[in-house]
Length: 388
Image 1 (cartoon, rainbow, N blue to C red):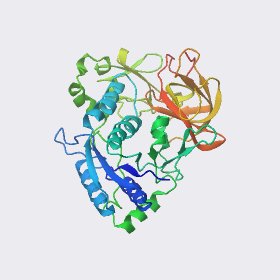
Image 2 (cartoon, rainbow, N blue to C red):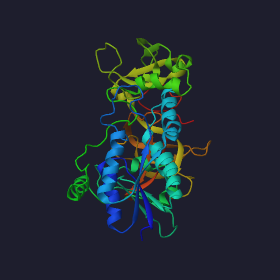
Image 3 (tube, rainbow, N blue to C red):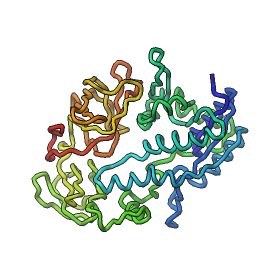
Image 4 (cartoon, one colour):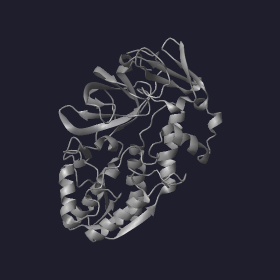
C-alpha cells in the first residue's frame, strides 16, 4: 500500500518525471521536490550542457509537475552538496584516489538531506527515477536492494550504501521498466521532457573540462591550498622499476587505468598503474599490469545481512560498466569494515576510491553490499599481492 504522501526527487529528466506521474496515477499524494545543488555558471563558462540539476533542469521539472498536476518546490541544498559530494571528490583526487560522487549524492543528499526536508512536509517516503528495486525479506523484515529489470539501465550499483532506514522509505517506480517504455509513457502524457537526452558525466564538472581543471579552480574555494599539496607538485612519471619516463604537473590529474594525456613517447601503449601523491610520482606500465585478482575494500556496507564474519562467495564488480565476476569476499582480520575481494579471474584496473559492489551468485539480481576500493602497499605488478 502506497504511503499517503510521497516526495519525488525531480531532476528535470524524463525518469524522475515519469516516476512522479506513475505514483500520482496510483493514487498517492505526490509532491515534486527539485534540488538546487550547484551553480553551473560560477566561472562564467556556461558549460552546463549535458549536465543534470542546472537551472534549465529545474524549470523543466516545474513544467513537468504542472503537466502531472502536482505541487513542485525547489530546495537549496548547495552547501550540503558541496560538503558531502564536492569536497570529498576534490580531496579524494588530491590523495591519489578516484571517487565516485554519485554514490555520495544518493546516500547523503537525496536519501538523507532530501528525506529530512520531505519529512518536514509530511511525506512518508522519497521516490526517485533510479532503475532499481526494493523488497522486504519475509524472514528478517530487512529491506533488500535489487537490480533494475532493465540490465542496460540498472543503477543499483550507485545505491549500495543506502541504510535500512533509507531503503525502508525509498520508492523506485521504474524498477521493472525499460527506458523505451518510460519515454513512451512520458510522450503519451505530454510531458515536456519525454525526449530529453540523458545527462552525462559528472554533473558539477563543466563540459569539455576534466577533474584536474575543476580541482585547480575549486581547491581554493574549499579552503585547500593547492600549492601545499604533494599531489599538486611537479614530479616524475616512472615505470615499475622507478625508471623516469617523463614529467607531470600534478599527480592528482591521473587515475588508475588512464591511457590518454600521459605526454609520453613510447613504443607501446602505457597505462597508469598507480598514483603516489606523497612522492609526486605516477607509475605507468603495460595494459596487462592493470589486471588484479585481489582487491582491498574499505567502508564495507552489507545491505540486509549480518556483518561479514567469514568468507562468502559473491559476484563482484569493480566498475559500473564492467561485467560481474565470481569472487570470494573475505573479512579483514585487523579492521572492522574492511575486506578483500579475491576474484577467480583477474579484473581490470580496480582504482582506489572507486566502488566495488557485490551480488548474490544464487540470485544475481540481489545486491549484497559494497565498499570503497583501497590503495595498497604493493609494488606495481600484475597481481595485487599481500593483503595487509
